Length: 432
Ligand SMILES: Cc1cc2nc3c(=O)[nH]c(=O)nc-3n(C[C@H](O)[C@H](O)[C@H](O)COP(=O)(O)OP(=O)(O)OC[C@H]3O[C@@H](n4cnc5c(N)ncnc54)[C@H](O)[C@@H]3O)c2cc1C
Image 1 (cartoon, helix red, strand yellow):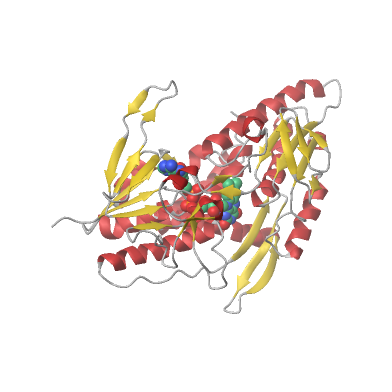
Image 2: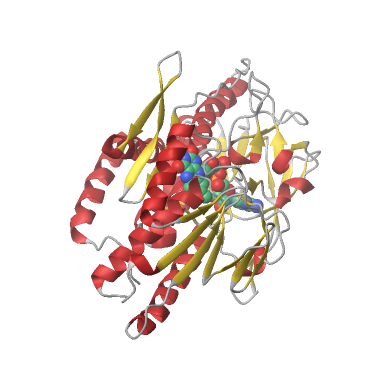
């Protein structure tokens, strides 16, 4: 008797947790064949990317090679980029893989599935603003974060020579006052402090001008006023110029233009304003919601096809109050658990259960300066304001939960130990 093949496309915050659970429970026991497809050979937890971008985290230490993880956890890994779908024949189309010179390494392929799970995450949405694609950095993938880091180091060095004779100012424009923009601004000050203390650059943090530009009336618009106020105060204390209710209309090689007529000169520009699901989702013939997200029912199944599921940032899952589940790592983590149970139930011929999102709170880490946020307490879901070490502890715990889901408790304990040792052995910033 043949066993069902479950193909998961996208091994990110949610997808990797899902294939790990499915592989351990169904793959190892021969109850289903579990296949993960991702266009990258390695995984890094996306909320760490702003730390990769400033060198606060060496991605080489935290990334997971899918192929070896697959072998130890009962699933198979296929490297590939989703290019299309044949729903009648239940087949995925994967694009040909090319090397840096455009030479074909692997031809375009098809992959058959019985159940398909799409967890492709999201990318930045530039809302077709002129100049953004050409002149802004994005922090959506490890490659982009690494490209920003190299550009940042080169720019710091370039200005360092000038700093010996004059007092130049290094200007960074960050568009988007959500968690990514806010955390990146603080990380940049921290990075410059460290680089100055290592003697890598003559520039000090007083010579860094960061403009954080947000179209809404405040930074972190989804968070409570008390958190927003605390974050604003902290950023302004560092020297960040926070511009709210300011819409960017155009970006040039050396400046950002706003709708109210300002021209903000920049040496580095980052776009972190809004997200959408990857464009390929518009070509699959599935119903989409705002931001190109796949519309699923509350069991995470596509409203168009009972064999297709979607979750995480690329899915629009309804909530009881009429809104959809927010695109966050904690939502992807919770959905991976529900989907794992639903896929098992489906194989056993049992009914699927609805997903209910539990907001555990929101935490913002401003590098080594401060951590601030709220935790949801008890069944009444009362908000508890936290800051300092306690907030930092809960901020890090979300990543530890992800590590526990993909490595198990013992290995995560060892990783925590090694991370502690690395803080003594290695420089605090990746310098090369
Ligand atoms: C800088 C930053 C900081 C953040 N901080 C937080 C935070 O503090 N708290 C929080 O809750 N959330 C945070 N988020 C949001 C969080 O990272 C996402 O909500 C979460 O990663 C979504 O998980 P996912 O599994 O849906 O997608 P992802 O984790 O993005 O994974 C998507 C996967 O799909 C793969 N993929 C994409 N397209 C294709 C394709 N065509 N073919 C094959 N593979 C493909 C990618 O390689 C990737 O592995 C942050 C995001 C960023 C960028």
